[in-house]
Picture 1 (cartoon, helix red, strand yellow):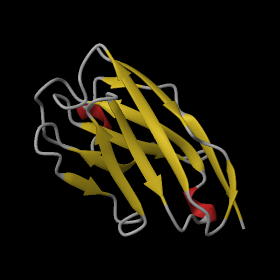
Picture 2 (spheres, rainbow, N blue to C red):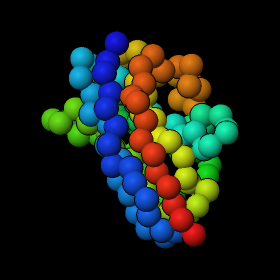
Picture 3 (cartoon, one colour):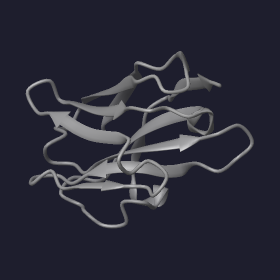
Length: 126
């Protein structure tokens, strides 16, 4: 399994931006499809965005399309989530996940991921 460490969360106001980072070790992010999920208080963990291993094709949940961008830096073995125009409903614990190496299916299904980070809290005030 790969080890994942998220960072970059915090408390911001509506309309602000945040960038989350997910540093990976034990496996390259270029060989694993990576995803971001979030879990609001008292709710299920939902899909936010994913990036396919290899060609880097990206996928987004409907609620974040046009506002969030997932990317990766192969040299740093890190995946990022740039979040713009934040809303109070974006408040959640954000988790980074990694799929098994060279696997690319079910991006929005958390059971497709075999490794998770510890999560980072993002709070957006109105």
